Image (cartoon, rainbow, N blue to C red):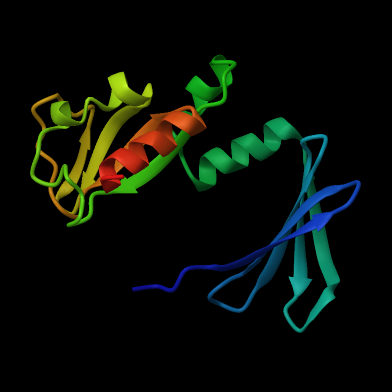
Length: 161
């Protein structure tokens, strides 16, 4: 299994946030997320973090287009059309969950939290738009969409809290 990418973030007062990534091949790049929505991608000398070889400045639409290429997200168009803040999160079903082995309907997640379980990821494949009779298994990962509060509530619910 590949180790997680090594990333770190640094606040840049008056500018935004710098996110650094060291790749598995030893390359170093950074992305400065400016408060005005621009993104600056910097390519660094891996032996000298202060030595930036080249930069690319992207406007908000260009950054969104690049993000779509790097990490496609079927909900991106929905987020652009809806003016509320929606979050998407993956919530695991552990062996301690009271819903392991039970049906989606048993959770009453949407009624209780306002958030929706829009897919279930299982080792054998993805199950988009699960029906109320879909039975959860230990190790499933639920894809949940809603407000931050609603998604947090589903996480607590699935964990048995």
